[in-house]
Image 1 (cartoon, rainbow, N blue to C red):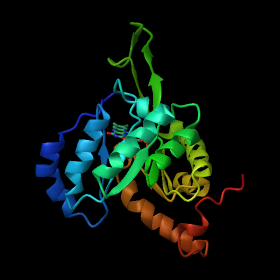
Image 2: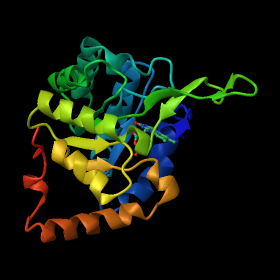
Image 3: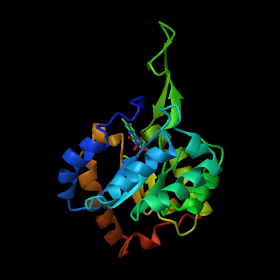
Length: 237
Ligand SMILES: Cc1cc2nc3c(=O)[nH]c(=O)nc-3n(C[C@H](O)[C@H](O)[C@H](O)COP(=O)(O)O)c2cc1C
């Protein structure tokens, strides 16, 4: 999928008033995906939501390719570290850095985020892509470029998680990118992720979110394993 949604959302006030009550009823942890135009924006969102009980932590999106400022914090290690250092005093809740694959060395950025205070990492966000209508010779997207997601990006995402896990041993990682099946998710666990996210597949197979935990439980039992511990980071590479 190639999208250029540009992070459209209801904004902080409406989120607190209308969405948080629904989230509070969910029997799970809630991490809020945060984006801003500046360090101050990010810090304000985290500090406002720090007092909201239903929110367990933040996934700091420094990596969306569809906004002009979007990749500065994701591509410059010094800027990335500076952002997390500024967020640390804004919240006591979990800070997870959502990283971009559109960089030369994702391990370097992962290390900078952790040095700045990120306690967990999630990756990858979308790859920067472009498609052209051959008849009109115009880009398919009004934004010209967009974020590429889904199965096509999975090998890139698996490679990025592997590099981040090697760069930041012991830091929890959430693997993201093109997961459609248990086997896809297992690839991420084996290279070092201890959780996964599913994005694009929700458009095609929204029930995967219900099936995957059960399938994973059955697979672990079949392998004689009590939990994922022995699988995470077990890659023979
Ligand atoms: C329609 C769409 C909207 C997205 N919006 C966000 C967003 O608001 N914040 C974010 O961090 N990532 C966003 N992403 C990126 C996904 O969370 C995910 O990192 C990426 O799509 C790769 O995973 P997938 O192949 O499972 O979709 C979006 C992706 C898609 C396709």
